[in-house]
Length: 247
Length: 247
Image 1: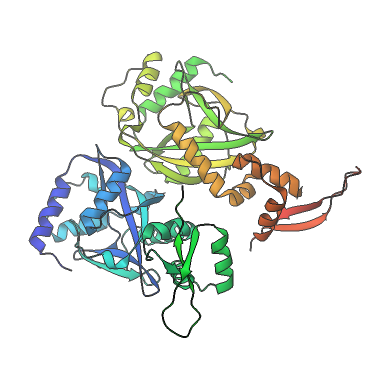
Image 2 (image 1 turned 120 degrees about the vertical axis):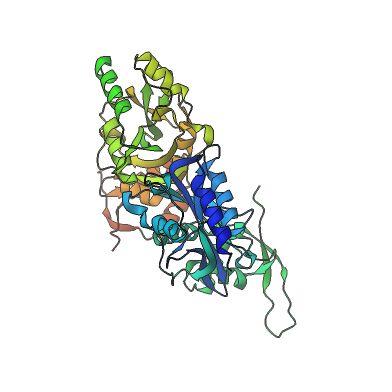
């Protein structure tokens, strides 16, 4: 999706003119979704640059860090009410490669003094989420103009250390997979063991053995077994399950 | 342990005069150790204030975030080569209660302008570690004068949001317990299942059933079974184990 360039320049100018951000701190959101068995991540593209980036932004002086992550995600993707997990803070000295912002501003003919806060060192706090891929119908914010899903194994050229942030976010989702799948609402209320296994396999990026999977998942006591599911076919009817309420 | 006050004032003055820290960012280290079956955390006490705090400090402009955590921990506790895990970043607006620094500086008769960086909002990155309690023989840095271990369930009055940081750090250690115990080097090279279970119980703060524990821990494939341990008593000799090398 494209936005017209004059609007884009205007909002970038607004961002640059903002004086009430906490300096040196940013937030970046790694939003994962899956499309027919493939894990994808949501990326934005810098204008006039062959570089993609995660939806990210800055923290207002009077704003909690977690709230900033939700607001930034909304402003840049229109995604709302997303279960965001903070997973890691990235603070290598050289992680913010200033040229990205310089070229971006130059291309838009926006003049900024050399000691502007946007050129300072930034430490970024990473948030991630697993969401329903089909929910996203959005447009980019001030700094970007296109938005798209990419397979996590086939990333385009990324700005800053965003490729590392994606890998770390994916590790977090995989480690915390039970909570993440429940929070993602990716499954219908009632589902078969096979449907659940497909979701696990997609997130983990590997095939699982059916018996092993079933034994391990049932040992967690997170599922409630319901009635059998008859689809009218000659196959043996599988049981339906739902996530048990944790009280 | 106490340090003399004149030295303390001098080093606090040095800290206040430092101009090459990244503003708004700090690091705090929650160091856990255990003493005869009880989990403890290492705290420092602010001078002339009835408030304890985690060993923490600031990040130099030319320093990676992770390196800052190690340096700060060393400067304030003399602990070296500690396996530090970054676990969460704390960014609530009101988490840095400026009065702590104001009173501290006033008590030492150090004059600081109202807009000094130390009074700004700070977002802090939490690091934690599980270490051998007996390793610590250290003295405090510029801001503090006493250092002590406290039971995690019996914390004294804490500065800022440090109590929350400790709770979150403890959750991280418990969630990541297998890695943390290996990294902590708390056990001798060869140990019995009973010794291992005691370490787990202490970290988790709960008793575990012997059969359950043994079954679960062996299923992880992280242990290597060695010879039996004969202590000359009439009891049945238990096997010794060691952590298997991961290759």
